[in-house]
Image (cartoon, rainbow, N blue to C red; front, top):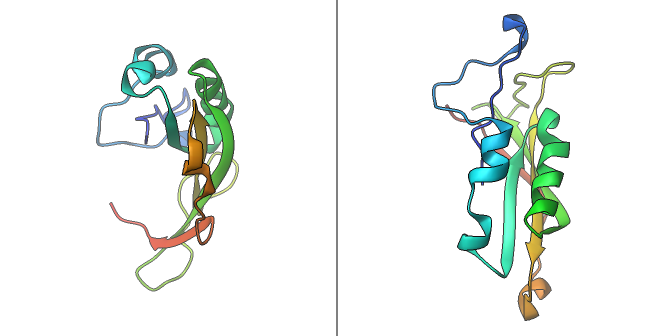
Length: 123
């Protein structure tokens, strides 16, 4: 899940212009039909820094236990670290929180090679 967060703030110099429709935190929290989509399974949520606590609350509200995270280090076409927007620091990464709920049986035994993805950012 990559929620369409509202990235702007009251101060226009601190916001990020988006070219897609966004949802309020309340809409994301109350209108996504998590329980209709799955009873047992994993939930992966890409989260920006100022929505980290909100994402943890979203997991808890919908019965998910956070178990891990992935980090995507963004790169330029030349392989250098690509700095992006941020309130205090320019962000060069995105975090994906991983949670699960229900009876997953043997599905937790799989292994992922690494929890860091190095990949070029795109528009």
